[in-house]
Image (cartoon, rainbow, N blue to C red; front, side, top):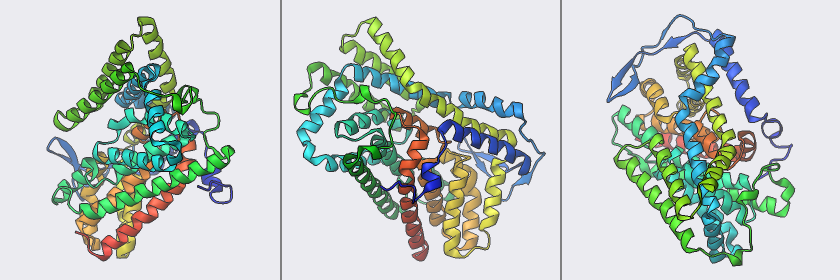
Length: 467
């Protein structure tokens, strides 16, 4: 992957620090509350969820955000994101205990020994697709505990933490965002459009598989580049010493205690899957299970109370920066609500789409959903806020409801790769210890390639009247 100054000089080589970037967005949104009119759509509750009423947008009294409230939005953002913040800490604590027990290191070392270092590229491809399938079938934040394993694996193969994020976070984001069975985007969209649930799955599946193939290709390309020239690595300055293998590959084997720790972890994951799909568990329940796994791993590894306490504090210290970024990013959503400009953005973008040619309108609809995604990072929230407006607009433009939902899914799902306001993305990157500014430098070519691929699929959908 070429990240030279000649290709994307401004986007890739001059990206500000993550804190600077997010504070800049906070300042811009604050200014927008003085420029854009405050407005709102009427909403009705359907099956316990608030849904927009089409053609109900109206301007309300302006509510510009002052300097004090701009800074007040930051602690309010932390309050709103407390569940995601804690799952980052809980996931870090769980992995801290597993790392302390040496179970993860020994498992990865044994895996690499069995498969052989001659098949490094194959391992990277297989793991990229495994993480993609996890995102596709299991969800997004539900997989946060799996991210650190990719970090240990990448380092064992001679890669770096950026590659680890590509294998895990990149693949899961694509798998989740373009999943043909995503209940939050496709499922909500089909329900609003009164279409058969998860219909049109073949085209979506082809798009998702193709996008994961692009991710796997870029992971291999980056791995080859840093193998030939380590100076090309984007993770300079990252502390990964505690994640590296401490002995030669041939010396690794799994002990009885390691197997117990791994079994506890796998049983915990099975409990999470059952709870998510059958008991409607969400982030707090997942955090509780992570903490239970951590405690059990400490007990079976025969750690004393002092060692367990020190392990907790070390894990919290390592994950605290990522947890902070989640709350900081959520401040942007709070500001939008203070200024009442979220619905205004959606309404103005829908006006732009009117009168566009058929193919252009489909692509621009997807682009508009990408823009809205930075202000409404929740997939289901964005669907409930925009699709009641976009579905009738799409039909008036000559687009089937299935195409409108596909355009929405592409706009929401692909832009999640670089969305600094998406708490789940920031949380999982923090588990790889990768700041979002470095991540954007790595993932930007993937974003452009996948977008072009997705737009091509969208054009095919329009040409074939995908319905």
